[in-house]
Length: 359
Image (cartoon, rainbow, N blue to C red; front, side, top):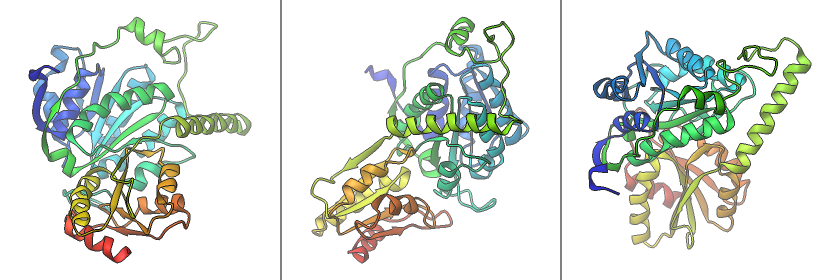
């Protein structure tokens, strides 16, 4: 990789640069701490003058999600970013997109809650992302970066998965990853698709035509119960395929571990120092980091939990992912959770003490 491709930037800035470089057609968003650098960086880079990418500050998060809905319906690569309360406002639009099978990318740089909460980092939106904050039986593909490099890399990955399965995809970050600065390698420039390429790749889009030459209609509405059930069964079959094919995770020092930590995002980074401290004290501990929060690596966690003295779930919330871990472990080992609230990030030494209590 050429030296000039290596640069130092914040996680939020990496999202903006990656969106331009991966050929995004449009960004529609609204400022909110701690993710405002995304739209600020896009405004500074002015991609509408170079790649033709549209960048628009909407009047609200509700407006931005509906702009994403429209762009996605036309087969465009569109994205938005926000933080926890802003993403809460987008939930109706996200479930509409899931029901209409539209691809779109959403970045959530989490802050503490509930309500307006704090501008400090949190992982309290795990339920909102993985359970779906909108109505109906639907899923959003959820990627959880734990570095600035992954913030950049996951933009293209999220678009690939969103279009492959015609489904919304979310990058679930937090204020730590969004605001921290690291050296990263930016992705190479990828040209935006031509209108002919969009029509070829997205024959279902509003810009296309049905077999009898009528315009395609995009909707999540179906008034006949039998037809609505067929649509739901189709979605469930798609979700099953995603679960079978798209689980992503990382393991660190699990081969000889007596105790397993499960953590995602910034919490997973914190556990690396905790593992170093614990092993120096003779506690053999390893880490499984879910990269996809949905689909969740349940089978992999179940396999690693076999024969362990315990499983500690570390997350910056009151205990959300721990429910999925307990379901996966299914009584094979004791499962406990450690986290801090109010925007306080756990110290590695606190994690080690929690490990000791589990044992």
